[in-house]
Every structure is written in C-alpha cells, then in structure tokens.
Amino acid sequence: MAAGREGKARGAFFLPEPPGGWSLAAPPEPAASRHGQTSGSWWGSAVAPPPAPAAPHACQGPAAPGCLLNFGSESTLMLSQQIMDVIGFLKSQFICHLLICYIFIVSGLIINFIQLFTLILWPINKQLFRRINCRLAYCISSQMVMLLEWWSGTDCTLYTDPESYHKYGKENAIVILNHNFEIDFLCGWNFCERFGVLGSSKVLAKKELSYMPIIGWMWYFLEIVFCKRKWEEDRKTVMQKLLNLRDYPENFWFLIHCEGTRFTEQKHQISMQVAEAKGLPKLKYHLLPRTKGFAVTVQCLRNVVSAVYDSTLNFRNNENPTLLGVLNGKKYHADLYVRRIPLEEVPEDEQECSNWLHKLYQEKDAFQEEYYRTGTYPAVPIVPPRRPWTLLNWLFWALLLLYPLFKLLINMINSGSSLTLASFAFVIVMASVGVRWMIGVTEINKGSTYGNNDNKQKQK
Image (tube, rainbow, N blue to C red; front, side):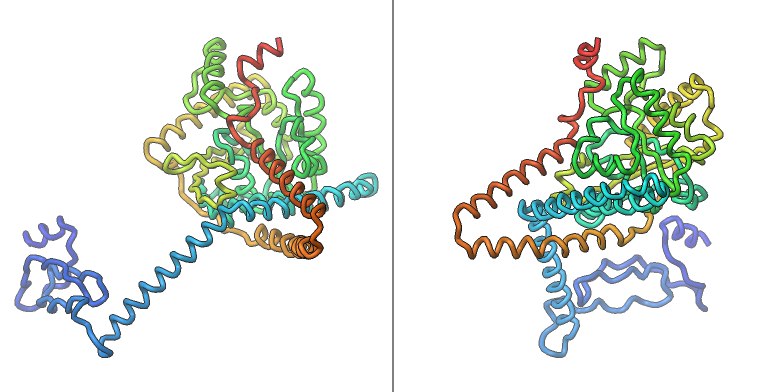
C-alpha cells in the first residue's frame, strides 16, 4: 500500500494486482522505435518490458516496411510545408493584394449602384427596401470578414456564458466594444457574422465616413447613425435615426465604441486628466467613455433591444494586428470576452445611466488587467463555427470579375499599343494609391485627432 501511495504521487498508471504480487522496477530509459518515436514506460507493470526495438539504422531492405512508411510520412510533411510556404509567399505579393482590392472595389461600386435603385422601394414598401439592402450590404462587408477568417486564418475565441451563447443572433442588442486595435471593427464584424447578423449590423460612426465610397455609401442605405461629434448638433439627428430603427424587420446588433476614438498613450493621458478633474476613477487600459451617445441609444431602443453585450477584445502574445497584416495573410489570435447584460439592468435616468457606464468600464479595465496577467478571461472559451457564406460570396465575385479583367489585359498586350499599356499602368498606380488610402483609414497613427489637446484648442 505504501508503494502504491508513492506511485500515485508520481502520477503512475496502475493495473489490478496480479497473483503473487507486483514486480516493480524503475522505468527503463525510453528507446528509439522503428519510426523514430520513443517507447512507453512500463512503470508498475506486472510483466517485464519488451526488448527495445531496433534503431532506425537497423532496418534495411524490402523486409522493413516501417522504414518506407517513415520515409513517406516525412516526405508528406516536407511537401505540405513547402506548399504552405508557397501559399504564404503568394499572400504577401502585391499583385494578389491588387486583385483582392480590385474585386472589392468593383463589386462594391456595383452593389452601391444597385442600392441606389432600391430607393424607389422606400415609399412603396420600406421593409422590403430594408431586407434587400441587408443582403446587398452583406455582399460588401462579408468580403472584409473573408480576409480575416479565410485569407489570414485568424483564430477568434469567444469567452462567454454558455446560457447567453444560445441567445446570440436571436435578439436585438447593443454591443459595446473597446477601441484599442486597428482591426477591432473587423473583429466586431466577425462576431456579427458568426451569429448571422452581419448584414443588418448597425454602428454609430463619424460623419466623415459617410462620404467614403463603398463602405460609407453602403452604410447610408443601411440607415447607419452618423454623428459630427458635436453633441449639441448631433443629439436631434442621432435620436431621430435611432427611433427609425424601432420597426426594423431584421434582428440587428448596434455596435458602439463608447470611448469615441482609438486608444493611444497621448489620448489616454488627456482622458485621465479629464477623469481627475471630474472626480472619476482612472482607467488603465481604456479612455474615459462618452456617456451621452450611449444613454440616448438605450433610451431610443428600449423595449426593442433585449440586452447589452459588453465586449472586450484582446490578442494573444502581445500581437499588434493591422489590416495590412491581414492582407498579407498574417494569422492573429483574438480573444473576445462577451457579457450579456439584460437591458432592464441599465438605468433609464440619463445621469444614472452615465454612472452605470463608468462602472462598466472600470469592470472592463479589471478584465483587461486579468487578461494581461493570466492570458485568459473569466468565462468558458467557445469557438463559434465558421460559416462558408463569406468565402462563397467572395468566390462568386472573383469568378464574375476576374475573367473580363484577364481578357482585357490579354487584348491590351496583343494590341501592342503604348498608349493603351500606359493607361493600364496608370490605372494600376491609382488603384494602388486608393487601396493604401483605404488601409490608412484604419491605422491608429493616422486616426482622428478627436480627444487630443490640439483638437480641443481648435474647438474653443
């Protein structure tokens, strides 16, 4: 029994005691097997261990099929690695980026053009107009999600309560997102896509984005709420836009960044100065939330929205993801912590709602602190299944648009016209500049000056 207790302490594996008692021996040194693996331990066994198999060099001739199997496995692994290296190389090539952006831009403009014609439905059948535009918007936004899910292969792990998990996608919700990363909007879209509400998702966005082709124009037809970030001018417009969503025919998530702008050290210092001046608790990983927009959103959507999804995003191994990295096929590892809070728990009074939001961000800060310390969130990790529709949608547009492009390119080369080739080169250069500009919109160091001292001085 003493020996048994001692073995258990070592984590040994035990069999029922045979007649005559145990014959215990120290575990032998692991020996190399025929396939280059090590033999298992026979600690606590009732029989003697078998003799060590011959070393790999001992197998010779046709009578040793194990050697052929080992050689075949190694060859397959080497071939697979070479294929992955080639695919990774292709993903980083500028010509692939141009083709992806060509598909996105041309398909986006086609969809914007179709959306323009759906306006005739608004006075006739508003709900049909909305349903059609949800599907059209999905054709655009899903291409961005495809890059994250399929092109870069980024892993997105959801940490949440299993009981809440089954409600996602089946109810209207306000989603509060932290604003720390260049692709946090893309991870928010990925969250929407996994639960089937990407096409109908809404955001509170700055007015400047409404003028951006494709995405901004798509949002116009989705009845997205735009604001100028001057609350005295925005309040009436924002309230009217939100009230219009009360009879929306599809389940939707309203995504909102309560911090108002992306986190930077400069903005954080200014934000904490404001917190100190107002007597509010300081935050370590977030900016001070701007409460008026959230309070009005809750007020206008109460009894339509069922819950608030408090969402906190982080990336493992101190990864600093960028849209350019995603375009290059770089794989990231995202962790998203989501708490479902019934809307009944959010106070109706504006001041109380403001206090509630400040407390929520203190909790979010604590969750971030725990994540940096332990590498995990205090909830069950779940990986929602990846749906095929983003990839199928992109393949449809790729097949539709790449054939005429290649045919045009071949005809231009065959023509031999210097003017034609120069025109084509000019279009390529302009497309490259346009793509780089669109990517630059997401970069933190080129983000808005909203929240900076310089910007505040200009507004005085």
